[in-house]
Amino acid sequence: MKRLEKTGVLIAALVMLLMTLSTVSISAATVSISKKTAVMWVGDSLTLKMNGVAASKVKWKSGRTAYATVSSKGVVKAKKAGSSMITATVGKKKYYCKVTIKALPVISAKVATLRVGDKMTLKMKGVAASSVKWSTSRKTVATVTTKGAVSAKKIGSAVITATVGKKKFTCKLTVKVRPTTTVTEPSSSSGTASSTAGTVVDTATASGGLTSSTAGLSAEEARVYKIIYALRTQWPEGRRYTNDDYYRWNGGIYRGGYGCAGFVFMLSDAAFGDELAVMHYDFKKVKVGDIIRLDYNAHSVMVMRVTFDGVIVTEGNYNSSVHWGRYISFNEILRTGTHVLTRYGKSTLEQKAKVKAMRDSLPDLF
Image 1 (tube, rainbow, N blue to C red):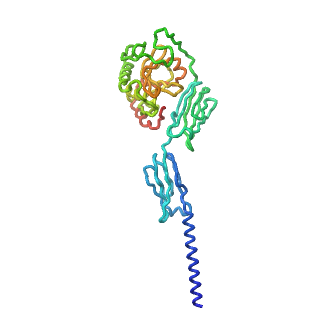
Image 2 (image 1 turned 60 degrees about the horizontal axis):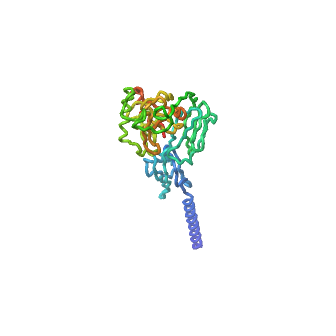
């Protein structure tokens, strides 16, 4: 009888042991991390969870806190572009999620002004074009294609939105009436620099061509001209300058510029230092050193000379290189120009300090 009792106890103990091992095995098999990989934008948050175990038994840790941090509750915060391994420890077991952080894309313009009939192309830098969805708030004022090409339809305002995943980036667009003023261009026999927009001027002999002479300029324009003209030795005709080149500007309105914009911003700073820029739309009042935005807000040039029927300019990213001495008629400027940036003014120290403090939040110009 006692032997049977002992046997029964042993069997019961064995059954309990098997049940315990089975429970532990099942529990271990069902514990998992909610994500093994994740992609985040800088500034985003993500909550990781452990399935099959109480949250109080999980210890979270980030491998690289400079790039991503994680709280005791599994909340991951993306700090800067890079990657970090997030580890969840449960007892003696570890579970991992590799987090990749990407820098936020940048829209090429946060504010823009077009004339009725003008076009411009918005771009998103830092993300594949195929992943961007474009939309407009008012199709009657401005339309936008799947590639970011904006067309101004009538006077008014509209917000152009680029959606990347769950993020939205906007450009506030103002559409104004197009001036009806025209300029009669001279005939080719009149002896002027050119009668065709976009013609390259012979800088040695053409009337109004680029030489070291400052004849006919005001004292201030002569000063600006000499500084910029001297940079021809550092930036000679044909030197490569593309959208891969970037310059951080001191003039305000924009943080900096790529390609053509970056080149003229660099020349502008050389001539004007930290003087702030002002935007206007009167193309007939341009001066030496002013920046004109052309080609429906797609290209920037710097004025070197003003003639009675047009301007002679310098520019970067002209066929992927630096170019000096292109003539552009006022008719062409009125047709495709969007605005002028001038630095002929006197900014206060307070204004300069304010712009400097907010410069990193300003848009770049492409």
